[in-house]
Amino acid sequence: MKLIVLLLAAVCCSLGFAEYQTKEKRKLVEVLRQLDHVRKTLTLQHNETMLNSPPHDVENCCCLPALECFHANLIVHFNGTNKIHKKLNRSLNSSITKSGVEYCPSGNNTTTCHDCDSHPKVNVQEFFDRLESLIQRALSRPVQG
Image (cartoon, rainbow, N blue to C red; front, side, top):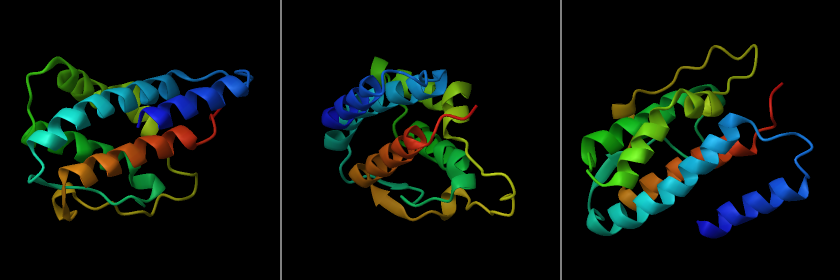
């Protein structure tokens, strides 16, 4: 995970910040860092827990509902008291994070997103892998003007 964040930082630096990094992109990088810390503590403690999780290949217009599903599952199953877990919960619920993840190309408003409870249950490690994948996908999109 740290390698991914470092590679992302290197790519941003190599571009010379010709296109400045938006507040959404900065927030998503922060979410990835927080997710890495939370994953380390929760995966070991709750390796048998099964959670509803959107798939890796969620449709573009369903990215925001997918994020909300991940957030809801974290609250229900891991309403933790540790500081980094609370920060991740706040970050996932942030309007900046939501606007960074929300993406629906114009003209594609016919997508029907699945309810969170209808997603299959996966183990904690897979849950975090899928959440990380969603955040990285949002980071890889071009900056919108």
